[in-house]
Image 1 (cartoon, rainbow over the protein chains, first blue to last red):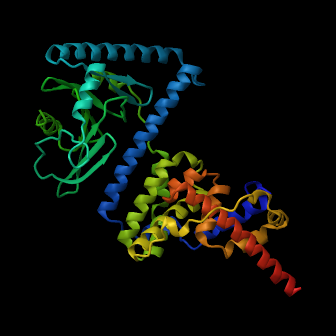
Image 2: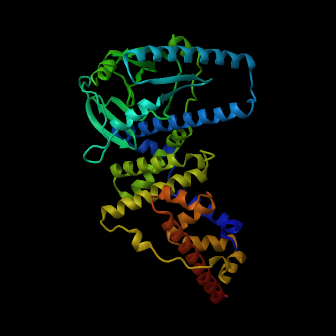
Image 3: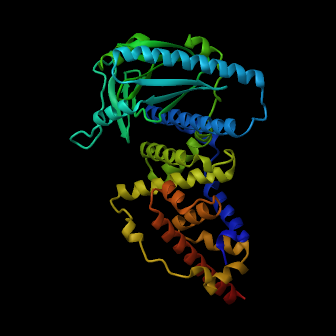
Length: 252
Length: 188
């Protein structure tokens, strides 16, 4: 007898599940009686941002598979050609700027900005030479943790409140007295893809010293992304473009 | 130039599935955790941990606004809260305590045939007196159709421990049936 296919047991388990929540008041009622801490909301906001990134990445993967295998149901040839043209133009622009940077750097780094219908995806790549260089720099510190290059300049009023290191990804959170977060992320550039919510976004390419970077302001939150021969860095917060660039430049 | 390109891009979906889940069940989860932990600050930690685990298995959730999903998030946060309570009381149930050799050949056990003859009410009676940790694992396995590995990730235990709980849950279900049958027989 296979319990998994026993319909009577399934029905009884449904009753059991209903019983689990029966003694809990409806969400609206509970919301009126509970006040969560700022710390809880901050942590949950970070988790939601992470979830958005993961779901957007999942959408990108699915769209890539769809594009390869079949035409989507709402297939529009004109729109598709427009996107191809834009994509080609962006790639040419970014690659040309990457080649100009080669003059100043002996290691080649580049990233491609791919524009899809609903979002923007930034894919980072490294040449074999710089990938080797990365192995040299992402070495383990004496305490076993990864040693990362961190900014020496932090905007006034901000203090480091959290440090999370998982795998080859590091996340540092600086918080000010108003509980605004300034997030500094370090990522391994190998196969890294950052998906950007591009609603009402105006972006611009900028230089951090002699490195190519990309800055954009989205719904009052500023973001700065750049890559050196070792890692991809991203700063997210509400401190303004100049402060972000100052933070980035303080690392070199 | 990039601003021009970005200006023509449409926007991303307003809310992701995870966010909808959070907005719909955060206070329910906080209440479920607080009922166990009796400490709102710890309940917040439990809910955060629960959402972290749920995020890893978000693909398993189809419909957000239904009792099945509400029960799922409550199971996750209750189990985390119980773990936190155990470690706070310094009486953790270790993997070793729960570990036991699995009995072999359970699928061909004649006692299993008994289960096929029972009604939904009899199952409900048996589940109502069963240890909650076993009933939860049975529900996650049978109703939510999660694998041992997925249940392990959700509950923060090993897959081997999940198999032990499933096995014990099944044994307890059978034992409860026997006792229920005896009681019914004596009443008649």
